[in-house]
Length: 138
Image (cartoon, rainbow, N blue to C red):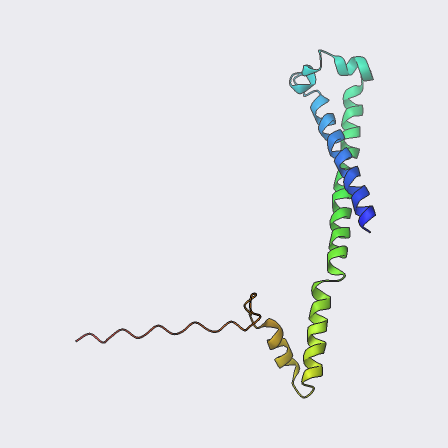
């Protein structure tokens, strides 16, 4: 799966570069802007007089491919991360707690899972001490 994600990421970078280039060379409605930076009428010379509609169509398709690749990569990354991490750890913790105390209820197993711990010592975090009461005013 890692190779597939790598190949799709490389393809996404290529599509990003192509999409950026297509947006930059398109002529705006007022015939000015970055399209003119490549020479007056350069796009018409290279791609013909109807290049505006062709470039617009190619840009739309490239944008669709970009969006599709982004969604596909997000889905694959989510599948890769969720397959062996959080859900598996919770299942193992519940199994361990049920095996250690078979008479305990499911509520106590859940409470042991959600009890905050200090990461350095793996000890439960103690509740903060109550502030001493202020002396009564006379």
